[in-house]
Image (cartoon, rainbow, N blue to C red; front, side, top):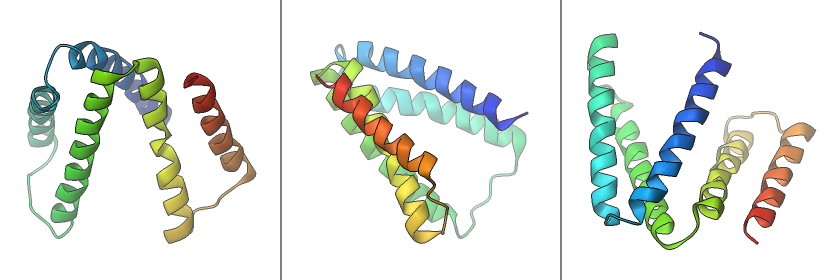
Length: 133
């Protein structure tokens, strides 16, 4: 399947996830919301992984677990923010995370920083300014 189809699926499902996360964040404790959403994720991941591949521990597995822990910290912070503020500001604001891998990719792995990428980053920041007011 083309990568753009996967990206579209991610966009749609993350959009639905963000909407329902806002509804749930106002009615659940942050830690319970994080627990149940993560538990649901683990079920899907376990089934998908066991069907598609053999589960093995390799040298990069520990790093993957650390990256997962970072994602969980971000999830806690995201749900806490949703419980206290408007989703219309929080979701786009936290969506600026995309700037970090662009910059890190440029610095550490030599990815190209093009005029289009710079314009995209600036446009994203400007959009957040407008959405936050």
